[in-house]
Image 1 (cartoon, rainbow, N blue to C red):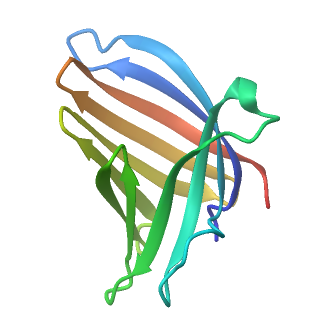
Image 2: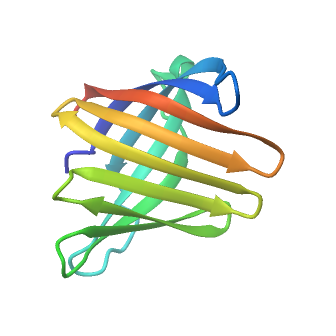
Length: 148
């Protein structure tokens, strides 16, 4: 799978509002690997997403989510995982090469879009809304650090 490997994510976080203020840069490492402990149904696949800070580069970050990839009859791939006790979903569209993930919980919602640019780079955009803070957008890219 294209996603499997170690990625460095560099994003710029901005608040929506009149000034569209830049809040801070975000730098994370993401390790995406086959979830060997999961029992996939025929035709499906599970991938663990481990997320850590840039200071964790040499260590193994904790699993953030285990995503199940399920092919659909129209050629798209449905994604599903549980985050903080809530079922989340996403979609990978082969025609656009874009993957959209929706994280939703009471009082909080984030939509993430990942679009491969080449074998080692993805464009990333995250829009987050919550009941207790101003909506934000994070945009940037992910660069492959290593293959499995």
